[in-house]
Length: 139
Image 1: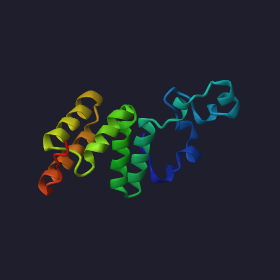
Image 2: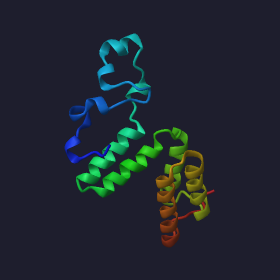
Image 3: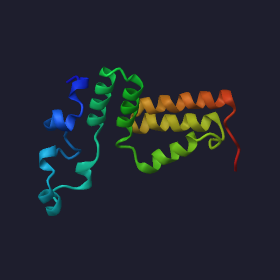
């Protein structure tokens, strides 16, 4: 289903379309359900589908860069936090020691997690860092 700018915010315009990782809808998330343990943090986390829908809305609103950011974010939902933080650290200027280090990181995202947009982003950073001499040999 293609989303339009008028679908924003989905929680108000199409609450039935907002479904959590474990299949719970917004209507299922009540105080009683939380207190009884039927709703957990997993039910409150954003899903790749929700981020993809946000990307469609952003694109329809004429915000292609925001849409791409939502698409990249959708690839990160199921990537372990420590992997994301390690990549973040490498992407800070002066942290990666070589272009190859960033390319290895990009390959991991692509091969282990299917995160092709994130991998392309890291590869673009590697080329830019190479051009600008942003690598360092800290240790």
